[in-house]
Length: 244
Image (cartoon, rainbow, N blue to C red; front, side, top):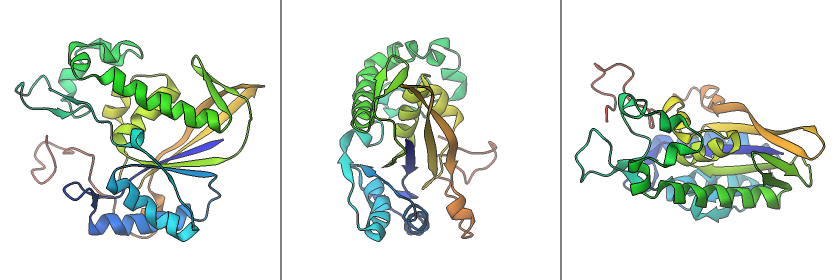
């Protein structure tokens, strides 16, 4: 089986939709995805993901299953460098803060720190991955420990239109690692496509392997520069780029 995890186009967060550039990106993405054989589409309940998916779905005459658990990963935390009344995004920590605590690299203990417990992060994470596993089980792959039992091995392709933060949650579950590693060391540009395949080297025992992360070749081939959304300043003196 193949999974496609697709981030929404350049976002207009105020409207929960896309910018003009985001719509251009979504159109270029739709030309790519609409040429594929997709068994099932799943889409976040947030507008920017639904709008991104809409162009592909229109081209293919298809519909998608809308999933609230695919919305952007929602717990808010108080960063150690911020005042206590400022709630921030869970992956926008300063590197020198989160890397100082080895617990955040622990596949099991990352959600058990005081900051994470106070935000209900583990409960939110479990909600996401349990629903994700239900979808995979419906398509023939049942989670058993750190592997999947291939009850009905297949070559179907499932497409998930969602968000960067939730993408890292899904990948961390498949890879059995802390999502903090992925949130902070990876960056998926708007409309990027991450491709994951099953690998079944022994009958009935499968894992999922990433063959491409954050691919935006559909933008490059059309001469469309990738959006900066999701990144921070490349060097500190880049005043025009996001710092916090």
